[in-house]
Amino acid sequence: MKYITNTVWILSLVSLFTDTASEMLYPIMPIYLKTIGFSVVLIGILEGIAEATAGLSKGYFGKLSDNSGKRVPFVQIGYAMSAISKPMMAMFVFPLWIFFARTIDRFGKGVRTGARDAILSDQATPTTKGKIFGFHRSMETLGAVLGPLLALLYLGLRPDDYKTLFYIAFFPGLLAMTASFYLKEKKKQKDKSQTTISIFSFFGY
Picture (spheres, rainbow, N blue to C red):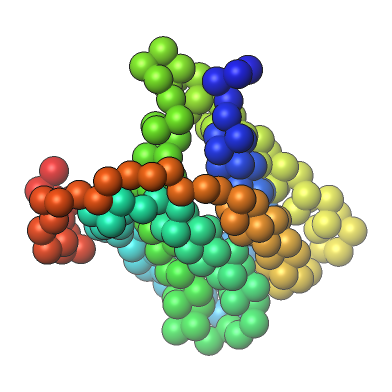
């Protein structure tokens, strides 16, 4: 697979580790939140705010990445935010803290997504674009399989010990952070037609 470059491998491994960490927690997230006093309505509000944060920030940071001519810092910062948010969810159980930690996770997704996809696109040609994005997505999906399996194995040994699982999820996130530091910035000319970027700039698309 000559079309799978080192950069594609690194990004794919980063996504695999990150999805492993995230998917360890998604199935048990509502249960954990209920054990620390969240109502069903509050869980819905929390997830709504978190996902809205990711959606609103993707366009903004994607454009910011274009204007700066840099991709790698956005990828590194975004994945780091998602990694550190995992243990934060278990450190304290105050509702405002939980909202902050969960939002940090989704904000990280917004920061990294546009820049990451742009890097993948730069690594592809018109004939290999589907293969490269397909390979990357398959590694993400593998992480989405491994995460729940690891969570099931742990909870089979330690039922109801949800809090520890958030700390365990930090380790694949840490592997993702470490792998992202092996990415190298491709020389790219800075966008000279820069304009002031609004957080709602994606509505202009």
